[in-house]
Amino acid sequence: MYNVLLVDDERIILNGISSFVDWAGVGTVLAGTARNGLEGIEFIRRERPDIVISDIRMPGMDGLGLVREAVGLDSRIRFIMLSGFSQFDYARQAMQYGVKHYLIKPCNEELIGQALREIVAELEEERRRERFVERIQNGLERVLPHAKEQFLQELVTNKRYGQSDWEQFRSWCPIPYEGGATQLLVLQVEGQWEHEHLFALSNIAEELLDQAVLLGTTLGERALLLIQWTDGLDELSALLERIRATFRSFYRLEATMSLSGEGEAWEARGMYREALGRLRHRTDRGEGAIVMPGYSLGGARRPSRIVRQVLEIVQRHIADPELSLQAVAGEMLYMNADYLGKLFRKETGHKFSDYVTQVRMEQAKRIIAASDDIRIFELAEQLGYGDNPQYFSKVFKKYTGQTPSHFKQ
Image 1 (tube, rainbow, N blue to C red):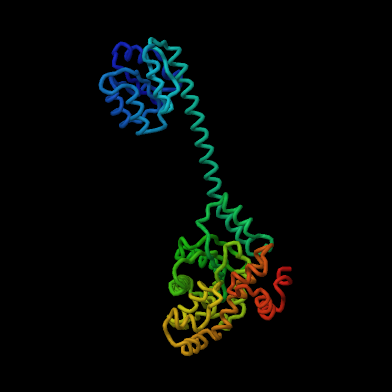
Image 2 (cartoon, one colour; image 1 turned 30 degrees about the horizontal axis):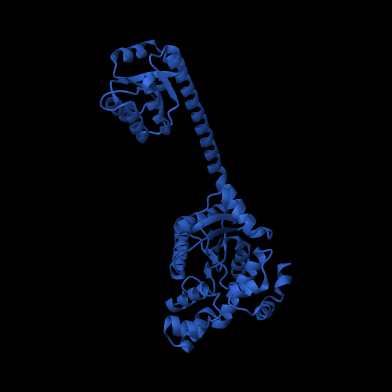
């Protein structure tokens, strides 16, 4: 049943309509009456009726003012306006507020009943649509987590998945991503463990990384998180250590995490291969570690703040042809280049120039794996080789053993 408010300043009309309309027969209940627009608005504020039947001309606040105020309170209210013949044009002003039903006084039971039936039918249809949308939303809420997991699995394992697939998926699945660099975090549990332990590790990581997580899934014996981290590497490495410590405190098991370098979200396959490669070649197997681009954090090892700054600078400026140890030391960190070079090599095991080449080549592998039509000169520009694609190809072949075109195949 839908609640109706009747508003008219003429008591005879108010009592007459109240008594002769078969309210229940048309699916309604007369919830209240009012003698003018002001009384009507007070009732609407308190009771929120579904339907208002109102005269046009009334003292204090007329019917048009009532409609205007009521729509401001609740835009879903339906109206039936009662008008003398001479005020019918005046009533049309209410059309801008969605009023569809106008009855000329004196009006009989049949006319009011027909208008009410039409409005009730509209309200029933609206309720059906709302219930349908609610069912769809509830269904999506149930399937979306699985769909997101499945999509990330395809993104990291299917070489045909690329930018167009990512954009299409985002068009119907809400992902808090507005473009920019992402990274893939690969997690695994050390020692003897059950599937529940991997699930718990992934949950802890998702909870602590919070809004940085775009997608998550499991693949075999590992969990994967596609993240977009906007703070520095220093903060991220500290948070990853916190994830390890939290997991260890609950389950007395060690966890290892490998973080890829940065790339576009649709380059997840290349990022996965990079992070997995580092994970497989680390030396501290079984102990648990945090393996980040360029270095590994074991139980007690952690690069100095200066080296972490260098690693972050390399990630940010990888497309700059002028990126060099001298530029980083002298123009960004204001320190001696020889000292910085020795410190960097001591803590990472790499010469600075070799590390920059490694980052560029790993990014090149990711981009080539994710793109069907990338041109060599475009890749060279993106990765700091300027207008020298020939030199880029030479370095790529030396690093991978293949030319860029053969690597794609």
